[in-house]
Length: 71
Image 1 (cartoon, rainbow, N blue to C red):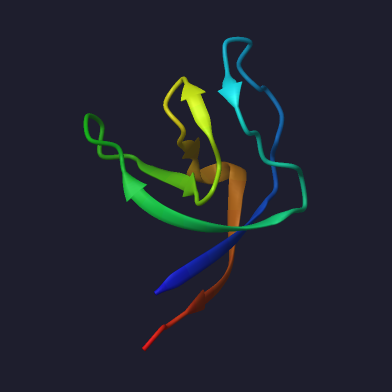
Image 2: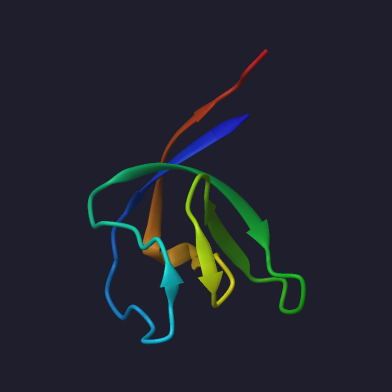
């Protein structure tokens, strides 16, 4: 399954962030995964480079757009 989500909040970029940052209104291929420590859902944008901090975004920054089942 491939998921796509639209960025709805690109504000508050951390000053120490090194890597790609989503643009508001843009649609990205994503994976939703729980954080290993907290269990809180995070969004991983496929193809984004992130060196620091860890390359995951709060799920509230995105809205789901589509899910494609690949067979």
